[in-house]
Image 1: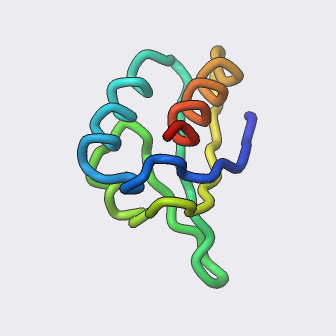
Image 2: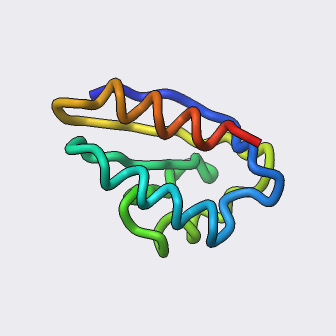
Length: 88
Protein backbone atom coordinates (compact mmCIF):
# COMPACT_ATOMS: atom_id res chain seq x y z
CA UNK A 1 0.00 0.00 0.00
CA UNK A 2 1.27 3.45 -0.95
CA UNK A 3 -0.06 6.79 0.20
CA UNK A 4 0.60 10.44 -0.61
CA UNK A 5 -0.88 13.87 0.09
CA UNK A 6 -1.80 16.17 -2.79
CA UNK A 7 -3.11 19.74 -3.05
CA UNK A 8 -6.01 20.21 -5.48
CA UNK A 9 -4.77 22.38 -8.34
CA UNK A 10 -7.92 22.51 -10.46
CA UNK A 11 -9.27 26.05 -10.32
CA UNK A 12 -12.80 24.97 -9.40
CA UNK A 13 -11.78 22.04 -7.20
CA UNK A 14 -13.23 18.56 -7.59
CA UNK A 15 -16.35 19.54 -9.49
CA UNK A 16 -18.35 17.09 -11.63
CA UNK A 17 -16.21 17.22 -14.79
CA UNK A 18 -12.93 16.79 -12.92
CA UNK A 19 -14.45 14.00 -10.81
CA UNK A 20 -15.73 12.20 -13.93
CA UNK A 21 -12.27 12.30 -15.52
CA UNK A 22 -10.78 11.07 -12.25
CA UNK A 23 -13.13 8.07 -12.30
CA UNK A 24 -12.10 7.31 -15.91
CA UNK A 25 -8.43 7.53 -14.96
CA UNK A 26 -8.91 5.34 -11.88
CA UNK A 27 -10.58 2.55 -13.85
CA UNK A 28 -7.40 2.11 -15.91
CA UNK A 29 -5.63 0.64 -12.87
CA UNK A 30 -6.10 -2.69 -11.14
CA UNK A 31 -5.27 -1.21 -7.73
CA UNK A 32 -7.89 -0.01 -5.27
CA UNK A 33 -7.63 3.77 -5.02
CA UNK A 34 -9.08 5.79 -2.15
CA UNK A 35 -9.12 9.55 -1.65
CA UNK A 36 -9.44 10.85 1.89
CA UNK A 37 -9.66 14.11 3.79
CA UNK A 38 -9.22 14.61 7.50
CA UNK A 39 -12.24 16.23 9.09
CA UNK A 40 -11.71 16.88 12.77
CA UNK A 41 -10.88 13.55 14.36
CA UNK A 42 -12.48 11.51 11.58
CA UNK A 43 -11.45 11.00 7.98
CA UNK A 44 -13.85 11.18 5.06
CA UNK A 45 -12.99 8.59 2.41
CA UNK A 46 -14.03 8.23 -1.22
CA UNK A 47 -13.60 5.40 -3.69
CA UNK A 48 -11.83 6.90 -6.72
CA UNK A 49 -14.14 4.88 -8.99
CA UNK A 50 -17.30 6.47 -7.57
CA UNK A 51 -18.18 9.96 -8.78
CA UNK A 52 -20.68 10.51 -5.97
CA UNK A 53 -18.24 9.65 -3.21
CA UNK A 54 -15.64 11.95 -4.82
CA UNK A 55 -18.12 14.82 -4.94
CA UNK A 56 -19.03 14.25 -1.26
CA UNK A 57 -15.42 15.12 -0.35
CA UNK A 58 -16.27 18.74 -1.19
CA UNK A 59 -12.64 19.42 -2.06
CA UNK A 60 -12.15 22.93 -3.40
CA UNK A 61 -9.10 24.53 -4.97
CA UNK A 62 -6.12 24.30 -2.63
CA UNK A 63 -7.66 21.56 -0.48
CA UNK A 64 -5.33 18.84 0.77
CA UNK A 65 -6.36 15.27 0.06
CA UNK A 66 -4.68 11.99 0.79
CA UNK A 67 -4.50 9.38 -1.95
CA UNK A 68 -4.01 5.72 -1.09
CA UNK A 69 -3.45 2.94 -3.64
CA UNK A 70 -3.18 -0.77 -2.97
CA UNK A 71 -2.54 -3.42 -5.59
CA UNK A 72 -0.14 -4.61 -8.25
CA UNK A 73 0.15 -1.24 -10.04
CA UNK A 74 -0.17 0.96 -6.95
CA UNK A 75 2.85 3.20 -7.65
CA UNK A 76 1.70 3.99 -11.20
CA UNK A 77 -1.85 4.60 -9.98
CA UNK A 78 -0.68 6.89 -7.18
CA UNK A 79 1.58 8.89 -9.50
CA UNK A 80 -1.12 9.32 -12.17
CA UNK A 81 -3.90 10.27 -9.75
CA UNK A 82 -1.74 12.75 -7.84
CA UNK A 83 -0.44 14.33 -11.04
CA UNK A 84 -4.00 14.74 -12.31
CA UNK A 85 -5.31 16.24 -9.06
CA UNK A 86 -2.44 18.69 -8.74
CA UNK A 87 -2.71 19.92 -12.35
CA UNK A 88 -4.29 23.28 -13.02
